[in-house]
Length: 153
Image 1: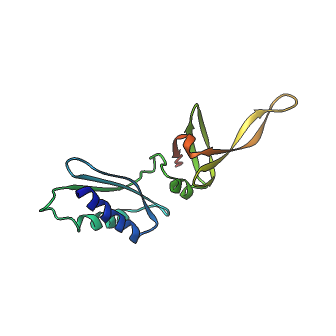
Image 2: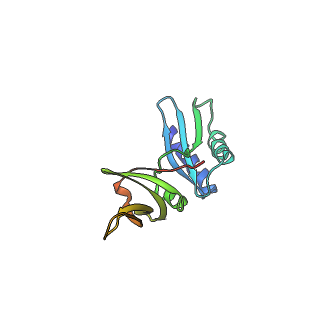
Image 3: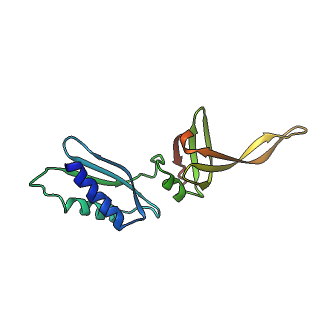
């Protein structure tokens, strides 16, 4: 079947460059192939071209008509996989969970949780006024509805 053949070619291309990983892969009813990639060290145009060629050059347009789009996960795209969180340690994230939205620096990421740290102004325990306190929260991936890197210019 066409989709299995494309998946096999895609997996082979990713094996040749282990720093790249798959975010999304679809084959539409009209043989529109869409591949979204990311990389542990980022991803560039050449990486996308290499994967595109590895797929396209091993398919016969005489047998199957198809279109192929290989793209990188955009900078504004939500993080999907633990591997993406790990490569973004040290960056600021906006994380939405059930009933809560947090912004903080990603200081750790495992296969199950992330750790966010941020500063907050809170009332002093004694007396008037506020003090700045360091906050830290571990969040399970299962509790995250959406997380995005906050891009600063």
